[in-house]
Length: 612
Image 1 (cartoon, rainbow, N blue to C red):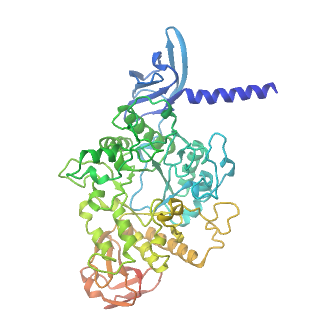
Image 2 (cartoon, one colour):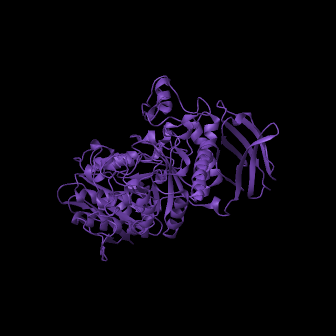
Image 3 (spheres, rainbow, N blue to C red):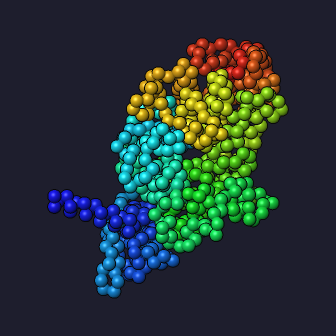
């Protein structure tokens, strides 16, 4: 009994201490390119204390008080000769020590800086962890987190977690996935609607309903054994309104504040519009994304340092292969440029995907490094989300073909690739967690879906699948975001169908799943479909023909967007075909001589490998 009481008091003390005293980042490494480290220390009335730190190779450069007396920001320099080890941050009031805070320097992995990011050779897979698979029901209901699992509520938490993802890496491997983008896993301890993960309340902790930091590290390591890279979804534009610092802001301008709630106008075009009103541009960048998402002010140098260090901490700590940055245009762009530089300085072969949700090609290209050489580059990003291709593909197979519509919309969009510095590094997709499911956009038509998937896997760029898209999961945005984020069948005990074991699926789902696997495997087997030069011909009569050519192999892809059979003359494509004599269709083992006429079935996309 006495022992239990002591244990209870220990838990209470540790809980209070964790909240009252914070040092972030919680630890750091020797051997980083940037020798500077800024610690955020939070404790009651810490501003009145004096710091004493005695550790070889570490210098205290400057101590910054905040507007709140409960913070200090401490600039350290970690010299090259500093060794890994532990030390204490001792805070004194006069001669009396008031705080004795443990800190640790770890040894940086020798290969950390050489981690390779994702590129055109990869097939990305986006999943929403709460809706993928529930591997550990024990974390569904946690006392300290009021938003608990209610699977019957479309907008509630459903219980998916890291354990569920880890249990199904073999499924992802079978799809040909080589890079996994997981929607935010960091703590979102919000009173409701927390499942999506984009209202972060602790930037250094995995949400306990998903698992722990250790569980995340184990997932990354296990994924490596399947040759799957992990891409972390990060959010710099805003935090959650229940973030611990919102109860005690270090500075009044830590977040953008207004007399009345002011929402962003979501018009990222104002950032590059030469005619934009300054007020529109300011509301775009400084307005809150939502009432529950305070807008972080990256113009505050301490916010900027905090975010930069946080991302580097996660890369080093978890061994990440990429970052997807949410709402990239909404943050301060000078800061974002500095952030990308800081990441690439530590990890030169890393890759960052910036979400730039814009409809125009030029607006999207604005956020890719080097796209506009005549102006000072506003961005250092290598990869951006290619929403223009998404919009074109969403409409192409439903429209009657014309000068600009139907498959011509694909041609018209890709014909603007001259604006990008490197369109091949764009991430392309047919759907994601914020837009209509592709299956719904094409009225669940299998033939149209196969056309879209073939285009995704054979055109330029880095293709991405969204969970469920591989078997034609549907969902329309006008029915609510939850309809875009349905549970994966089989991810929960008692599900009547199971995609992971392919049991009780419909004939349509089985055919779609098989097609996805065959197509992704085909892409992986042929580097020309990953890196090959894209050459396309002007669409005519509802057909679109393009080629992917590398030094050692060439492919011809033909789309017939018509509702009836059509014939095309191969002589029209002699510019490339004259170098080849035979062709083999995807799915066939037979090579045939290239005919003068090709017969195309309605609503089809056909891939041919060519041989001299």
